[in-house]
Length: 553
Image 1: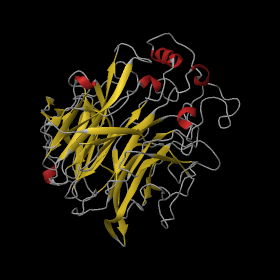
Image 2: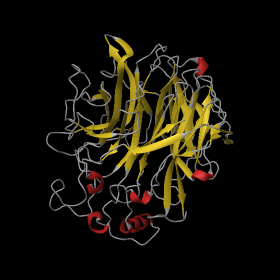
Image 3: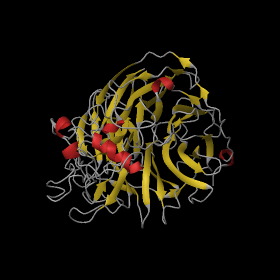
Image 4: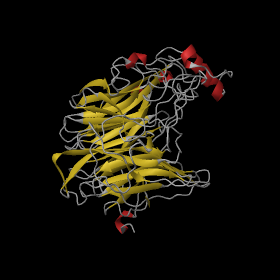
């Protein structure tokens, strides 16, 4: 049962306050993380065709040594291009750009210079169609899957934690990296995925150069669909749960996904085995209650576990909420409301990719303060807001706005707290020529950074950290019916650096035929036949990369 001290909650004020400005000296550089587009193919940045050239939903983690970093994304570099060919077959329609069954989509990229430059290492090893380095066996893993029996299905999250050495967690010999993603079992040969998503976790003890075979941290069953997982490791040596690893995710249950709880598991042995699945939120959706999605885990200096997620209420609207554990993830409090929210427009006017208001979070290890950031439309346009708790999540400050109209319609933020207590926030902002339509050349997206060094009381003026703008019309869903930007970006920081990783189409091109098709699909224009990108689109149509901006505060 949750402790009595965590049962109380206070709903944060509905007024979103503009944050005062502080001066922080900043500089930044940016680089393509998936470099080159196809691992080992130096020319693929220009030769890869849609959807082989498509990456999104990036994640990044910084090792404690400050030099090594690992990133991941939904990566289609192993997916075949549209139309007929050796994979899809000679009779495949030229407008067939669909996901090819049994081909993994979780990419891995590494840096050894603190995130300034990156190497594309291909697909996450141990899954179908990888061919990348696999670390020596970690021994019998009761919940592991034999190499090749799983397909990696993206939604990646990466984090570093201490290594387990002779039964003790320590950073003395480097760090252990954890890469969580959706994964599905496949049968022999090259069959289709079964779409019953497991949560797979891979571990690396050499900063991403090689990986152990994946372990199934959370299994699926029947028609249950697991989605949008988060993974975190307790990295504070003073915590009673130092080294423990946590995973949360949304579990969509039949019939028709009428139940949608947040579910939680943990590992006490460095990711080799995992606890039973624990439902930590309400499950059932009805006329009064909507779904729960976008969970994110962080830990405090005393071992506190915070799981923040978006909770839908059809009567009072959406809320950001948190559940808290004080016993290493065994039990959790009832949900505590952080703030009522107004979710951003889906889509943002001027483009047509899907959006969300999922939260990012971080904890100050010097004083235990917890921060939550999300994109909110309470001002009438998308703005990034930040709320703070100084009492282990029981009460929260009114959200402070840290972006402005100068950055456009803000979305897909990332937040982290450096060891010295600096709070870093990265986000993207869209400006448009016309908000009443969308298509090639209508919208422009850039990335920005802001920080606070006084516990969120004041924030620096947002700094543009993308060296080139992106056109969202250069991105596309595989079915071509909408643009596609994924569901999130991520930020990781230490005292010297903040790394913000984001979807970017500076190297891509839009396609007039696809624009017209999308307008026909949503009824904003006349219906047209589904186009065949190889025949009617520029070579770089659909080229969405993942870029990392390295910020020096």
